[in-house]
Image (cartoon, rainbow, N blue to C red):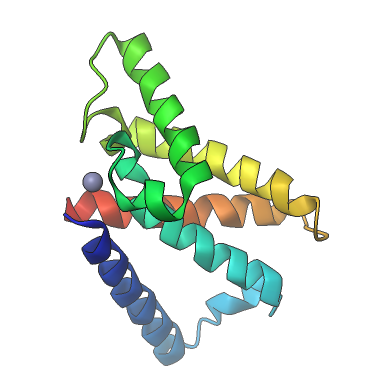
Length: 144
Ligand SMILES: [Zn+2]
């Protein structure tokens, strides 16, 4: 599936979650306490997550729009493949649950550390970042 389609399907899922939230009155957004900066970062990370598994293909959209994430995931994929004794290829380790989990953890921690330099972040937000990234990646894997 192409990067554009991954982003579009992610936006559709996002709207579906918002509608669900509205009808059921879950107020999922209260987790982020109307913190605008955290909301923007979370959205950004969700979109990065949607494209992240394709960091195993250097001409993919993740390299175009989220280069630091692409490089970190590409390296992670390379190392994972090496330790598994497999060839690093498109739809290989980065399209597996292990790869998805590991790249989500690393991306969330790095994003948290980076953003902490600029704004005051609670530690819980690192977990929120992990959740939005892995949700994006999950949608990617389901559709691929
Ligand atoms: Zn893919």
